[in-house]
Figure (spheres, rainbow, N blue to C red):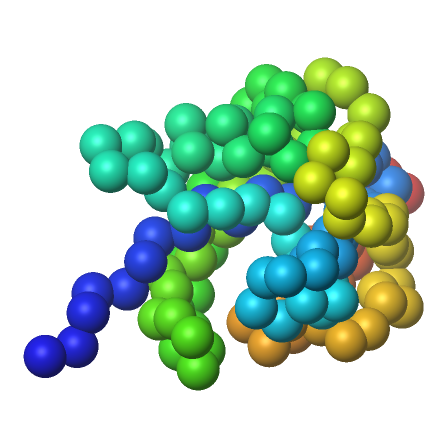
Length: 138
């Protein structure tokens, strides 16, 4: 019998210019050194947005004020079957800090690698969002 997927809350911090924050998975975790959008497992009884807010405080010292659900992706890695719940936040307090010894980088055109496999398709979708943002600001 297969286990149900693990729910994971994932946040995309987006600056007004469309840049997004990516973090690098720290040493000792699966896919060490790969880049991804920050987030983490949803605890039993916790709603997804609450999990997202908790993870951002724990990992980056950032307090998300508002976030919109964006999309969901299921991905099967060799070590886990995950259901990723993506939120976009344009409203947060604090500057990201490396609280778990992870690197992070603001990216417009994403230039970091390697990327976590479940992250790759989302970058194309984000490019569409950024293009819409540019049109609205023009």
